[in-house]
Amino acid sequence: MSVPFIVFSALHSILFLTCQRWHKKRYVPYAGGTSRSLWLCFLLLGLSACSPTKNEPTNQYIKFVPSFADQSLACNTRISIDDKLWSINELAFFISQLRITDEHTSYPLTLVDNAWQSQNVALIRQSPDCAENRTNLQVSFSVEDSIDLFLASNESLELRFSLGVPFEINHQNPVTQSSPLNDSSMFWAWRNGYKFIRWDMQNEMSEAWSFHLGSVGCESAAMVRAPDQECKFPNRIEVSLPLKLNSLQNNEVVINMDLSLVLGDLMPSQSTTCMFSSIDDPSCQKLLNNSGNNKVFSVVPREMTEGE
Image 1 (spheres, rainbow, N blue to C red):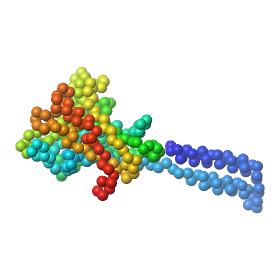
Image 2 (cartoon, rainbow, N blue to C red):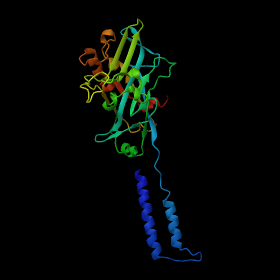
Image 3 (cartoon, helix red, strand yellow):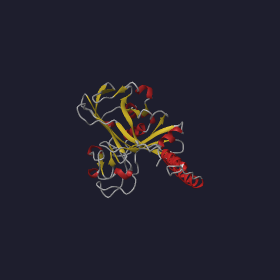
């Protein structure tokens, strides 16, 4: 229940009791048989009953824009790396634990269940085929009235989320999960769980490169059994972005994801492919460290998106 509703309800009750006492002390009958004071109380109570109702939660959106350096990545865009043209065959990642924070408080955001998000986990995917309906670059979440006070009282805010799936969900049977957690292409096995990031490329000479990020060091009785405790290397990446006060006022926050910063100085090839079978793989360690660089994600200034 919202604070304004509680306040107005309390005022309504106080006014009712006050009118009762006033009527008993100052009863002045007239020809109609009802006191003027009672009619006045009826009027005041009627007006006080018109208290503001709680607004329904509104939906806000976070839009992700994949890029490679200064190049925006559309569904069929090729990128040039080391004088070779690479096509992206798959680009997908999970985000979870979306929240707005200040120095002392964390305000969790509730994701709206749909085909691309459930259990407060969302799948972001850029399809390589423009004809396919497999692209989702948007996260939608509901905002309650109470966040207005939180936003208005803070000048330093951050938008935070995790690249990955929480442990409690990560090792469940994908067959029984709601979409998008039932996507087998983003799942290894019950022991290791989901691929938090999947990035597959192929160049014009049919050379392939992949980066699949997930948890490592998970212990269970078998690959088709979930671990009882967190994996030794969870490998969830925490992202923290500064958020301006007016960022949510137009119902959308746009976030750029620069894949060139994930790659860094690593040249894509079969030898630098990372499927995260081991934390000791040098390519995996470098890609993990690069992905944890907060510069990979950045909030696009509002003035740069208003004309789109």
